[in-house]
Figure 1 (cartoon, rainbow, N blue to C red):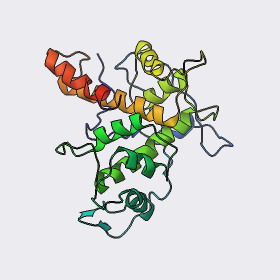
Figure 2: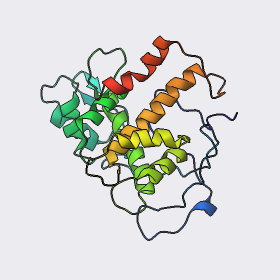
Figure 3: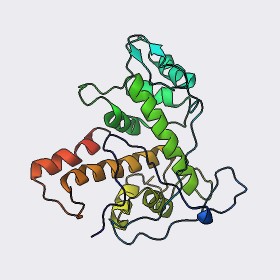
Length: 254
């Protein structure tokens, strides 16, 4: 059986799609630079077609700074833009050098659309220092999260083909496939059902729901690959290992 397609770091939750040959691109009158959709994935571990390394940088990100700016007893990574620093400083009112869920929710609203607290808690869980027993992040984690969301935003905008600000089931499948995850339709249905609005309408994902789905798929796949070191598509797990793998992605944000 083929491998997962590409190797991803278990420490990174950015999509990081590879570049696409020029012949795949179509001209677009819209600034999102829409391209053709990928073919259906052959299997869960199928090799996806190369997709563009496409992401729109969030406001204030991408302009290198000569030094890492200091903030109290902590420092941001080199290249962190002042807008990112200001977003952190504005919500860290006690000057502790850390922000928690509601503070992060407010900070991200300065550069992105609103996020639900459920998504915020998942983001903190994924990006926080694993040695910190508190659900919070510092300047370095905040800068990494901000950059990561910029990449997910680019993927979202590329596959939101009707420019509705929402992602439907087919668009979600193509978006995940473009970064190396040929997720089975049954799994996609389960993911989408989590966001049903209860009024009988078509289920679609906003950006924060899309980020949540993408990071769940990526995170659980990485955890599984730790057990499937030969990339065979199967692994032997104890009950304890299975529960330890899955439960954190459920209880941390529900």
